[in-house]
Length: 136
Image (cartoon, rainbow, N blue to C red; front, top):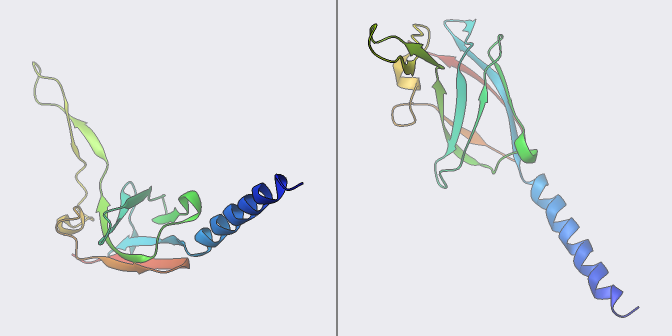
């Protein structure tokens, strides 16, 4: 019996810490629009300004995204970039095609990179709902 008590207490503590850590995470939901229309075919990426950790999701056909991986992400300030998909582009009959970002006139270039995006969002514990309107 004495052997099992420390083991039982360790297991209870581990479960308690695990549950509490998930309660301090945030999930992110929202929409991305450009000129009032949903932006589709792109990936939204959040990168923590302090830690560099990042997480992404593909936008659906209504411009919606839902980031709930592993129960959520750590609260903090995040830079947000909207990245177009890559497409194959021919370089001529004697060359292999190359991948490059898809031309998307409704996705202003400033939002396509973490280095140039002006978007910063504060993620808090629990639910976060962000409506992002891209400005030309």
